[in-house]
Image (tube, rainbow, N blue to C red):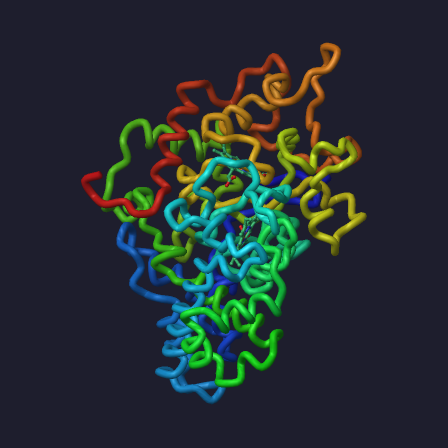
Length: 451
Ligand code: HEC
Ligand code: HEC
């Protein structure tokens, strides 16, 4: 259970998938349809699919919910429109000509072979006009974002899962600090950021006009789309957002663990032990934030409750921004996010990431400080029993939580495994850590029986 944030955060059950996240609502909005499709979402279709990739494309679901036709489009037209946008979004996603340098595509940082996380093990990726600039954050996976709810300062269970009166605290939103809700608004960030793609609506328009898919773009968005840079830019964002909702690419639910839940695969002894340690409230207690069970209505687990939580990740001194000792990435209270500036209770919190496909990642936590799952697990198990292993030691004293000014320490989570002190036994020993890592490896999509 996530209790932290000076007590505002109360016991939270599982976040079900029944809200309208980045996914279907957005496609629906793009097409000016009723967002009725959200409730069933991808989840209902795949709840029992287990290992098999979901055949229920969101486009089909969106189309299926447009009966009778709304927004002046027939079901077939809606289907066709989503298909066109998905195809364009895919081309845009892989196109470096959208960037100022001409060298950086979305896919450069979000590699399809690595669950749309980086292929390399840099803590933060290189970008900008000279391809040498860096931001302050690790590039996350783009998979399973369809279930991230819109950001809310106070999150209440909205369905039969839990007690609606319970405030789960800040939850949801895209990026590590939850500052945008829609894939399209999110895509604007890297396209315009001086340390990422460093582009502009005018440059993006020029690139699309000159691209091999320019005609397809006109066919999808209208003959006159290129007349306005702003309209073109918006269309680009819509297409990217639609592409990011392709179920078979972004939320196939095809891991060994999904097969196991569907009764179609068995976990090894080590994987099973790992699962138990992951769930055990007195051991890893991981599942209290990284949900591992199906929702009551049978939707597959997302391995996140999407809560924004402070866990005191050490300062990554290798990041150029951190050369300035006064600089701190405080997550939801800034500096990247600006609407909660000055709200002390939001300082140091970051959105709990999904652990699906986490074994394909090469940098972990918002600042990419760790590069193996073992390191991450040691941090969880020993942060409080052996803090000197993770934080700098000066004059014999450990500088714990060295990336969070002390006035915000009340925001830090204190649930197991973060409930210990030096001298206590770590929540997990080395053999147990190996087992949890073995379990995390079952969360990688693309499992085939017999592997
Ligand atoms: C230079 C590397 C880089 C490039 C290029 C890049 N991204 Fe990202 N992406 C990131 C980083 C870093 C974050 C986390 C940002 C944050 O938390 O502030 C991110 C976050 C995201 C997220 C939110 C993920 C989440 O967990 O909420 C989405 C969606 C996304 N990017 C899509 C895109 C798209 C679409 C493009 C191309 C238009 C793109 N990215 C280009 C590095 C990159
Ligand atoms: C109190 C909630 C909570 C608990 C308990 C918890 N986590 Fe996390 N987890 C988070 C948050 C929040 C982050 C992101 C923190 C950050 O980057 O600042 C995270 C990040 C991670 C990451 C990095 C993922 C990535 O994409 O970078 C891994 C791996 C992980 N957790 C595994 C675990 C395991 C294994 C356990 C149990 C030993 C566990 N977590 C327990 C909230 C939690």
